[in-house]
Image (tube, rainbow, N blue to C red; front, side):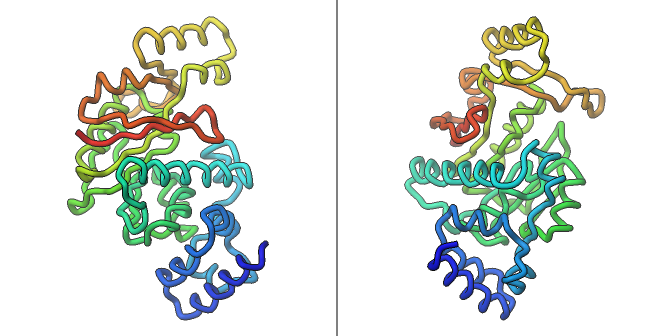
Length: 285
């Protein structure tokens, strides 16, 4: 660890003895985004007990693998990369910094993005919704900070006391939803974003079917054909709610998105370390 990083952390540890999460985060934001992410990923740290008592412990490797199939430094670096791309494009689109903005994490999982978003905003401005009770349980066990709420999968409308958000993001959520859930989710999110806000989602390119199951070439070709002809291809993983398929693997095009959701304007896209997560930036019309 670099000397300058050590200085900032030791000062944050002293601040943490006074019990203020907001003041500790204010100090930790003097780190670079990359150092902040690496530090948050390392908690708890026996050398910094006061900070470790205030900020969330990192989820277990088992939890990380269960959600993403990855854990440790590789997943950490993917996370830092995504957050950096989001922050840069938010500023490009709005002309404003992401600092102190109200943020909604749609599908927060075990809270890995939450830990990174503290770099920009305090926990009372970070909100998360997820359809899985297990997500809330793991976040509670690890003491993830913020306002977290369980939602329904098929009709994910929700109320957060009338709040609207500067930034809503959904990482590796719309890569798994059925066509119906994709529609209902995008419409619900439109109701919760500020007029000058930004929605960030990730989607799969058609090349995803070359690397994803099934191994059967004919089935892969069928999914690619659906992608090219319908704009949306979905492989059901057998999860249903009220008789409706809700979860699997999908790919869809920006043209499909624009045609079916005129309430959103596509402002561009980017690609990070994970080349099979196309990062799409949308603004409300």
